[in-house]
Amino acid sequence: MRLTRKVTAMALASCMVLSMTACGGSKPAETTAAATAAAETTAAATEAAKEAETTAAAAAEAAGGDMADKKVGISIYKFDDNFMTLYRTELERYMVEDLGFKKENITIQDGKGDQAEQTNQIQNFIASGVDVMILNLVQSSSAPQVTDMCKDAGIPVVYINREPDAAEEERWKTEGLNATYVGADARQSGTFQGEEIVETENKGDINGDGKVSYIMVQGDPENVDAQYRTEFSVKALTDAGIEVEELLLQRGDWDQAKGQQIVQDALTQFGDKIEVVFCNNDAMALGALQAIDAAGRKVNEDIYLVGVDALTEAVQNVVDGKMTGTVFNDHFGQAQTAADMAVKYLNGEAVDPVNMVDYVKVTNANAAEILEKVK
Ligand code: GAL
Image 1 (tube, rainbow, N blue to C red):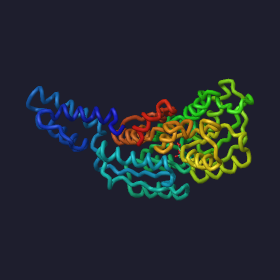
Image 2: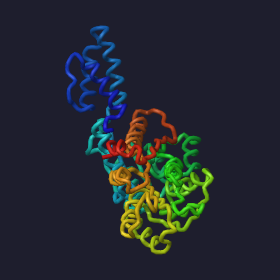
Image 3: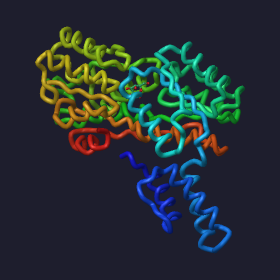
């Protein structure tokens, strides 16, 4: 999973240029620099060298030009979030190892769940003269203000994970602003969760009373991921003609401990009536599973449980039959696309306002395979 198609293409291009010399285990950025140099020396001499130069240019372009002196400001809405920790780790790895950025030129700040604090960090990025920003906003509703700050400073911005609203994205287009969003369409993940229930042998109706009674453990409701997953997971059931009954909807802010508490209380209050536990993410589903175990209930026998993200532990639970399903929220694809968009801006290329990466449904049928990718 680590080797993306792009990296493979880049390495291939470098290897073609360096076939006269060597193409061993050197890092892509070094390889590319060497490739460019090699091509430059020989280009004037022969026809073959001209070809090499073309290939070197392709390699450099694949690597995004020379990124070694580019400064990047990144702020994550809060470091204390399982999924965004995977994302941030991959983002930095990819930028340094595959795109040739210098680690010391990448500043990653913890927004600590506080928009004022994060806005401060963005102001500091501007003052320190970063070349591009990658921002996971605490509140996506701050996007218009932040975009204007970046525009005034002449710094392009790549928003990730928390999607600004449609009007703001439209404005980037009409006003020609250097702002873009990289994420995943949460309607798709919600739909996949609902389908995972529809695909069970009794379509979620464990007690056979003709309706599916569920509880919904929601993420941060300001976040469109939470809104859409809540809506579309249930919609997949009703679209399949299944009657539903919502016993409880409560916010758990993406947090495992909150997920556990909510489900523990719900099991005490509603007991066997609960047939399905929908969690907007895996961290809360892992908490839910602790509560389900403690109450002596058995997932896939007397209760169903689904999450989103494909955290390693959750996917392992799906393999083991302790969770009904999850949805792979592709942090590799999203992190790499976000970095690629930053590089495009740095190279003066045009960038689409919205860039979506697909989710993947994870059930017992493919969980082992997905586990190989995420672990
Ligand atoms: C979601 C993810 C959650 C949480 C959230 C933060 O996409 O599923 O686990 O990380 O982003 O905004």
